Length: 292
Image (cartoon, rainbow, N blue to C red; front, side, top):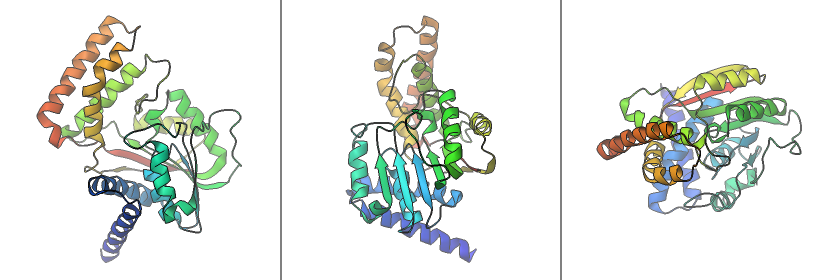
């Protein structure tokens, strides 16, 4: 028990150090602390160690990147890539957020490339170069199940271990249902778009993700469910769908009327949830695994 408490205190100190280095104002600092704490839980489960050489797929604004850099230390390195352009994102763009991280001591371990689609034929990485390949909270961003499979397959020869995390579709409390419903609504109207930069495009269950990883040649070593109920993501996704639904639907021309009716009914349910329980909406559990 004492050793566990020591590890917990150490983790808390590391989180504070990471957030302090980013130089955020107080409201943003509180949000970032919660986000960083969750990603530290993931890094501990994955057993990211000092000296590791890490490839991170879908680095976004660098929440996971900063934690990985702290874990690998000065003797390690993090190569972070994202297919989005550096001017994508809000309130800070991906480039602006990553510049803040790069300006800290953690930035010495980080190499970042935006607008980099690893699935393109002309994008290559040396075989067996990485100790850990991290793919965290990015699979729902992919365009299809087939694209996730192709990514898993391309990553297979690049490193020793795959470290994965994504929201789980298995809710454990009703306060998590609005987050799931928001994700389901988005994935349904996204199916009618030819191109998109939405956060949720393909809804994948833990079972489907494991199946795709196995087909690509990965063998699951350890898996778990991680709870971070103080994360704000559930409320963010619900609010986004409630406010943006009409705009998204108006931009789609070839959706059958019956599908529109069904989606509008789901949206009304979500709006009621948002109005009646916004302050107690919690994020989905997080499904995580390591594979070799």
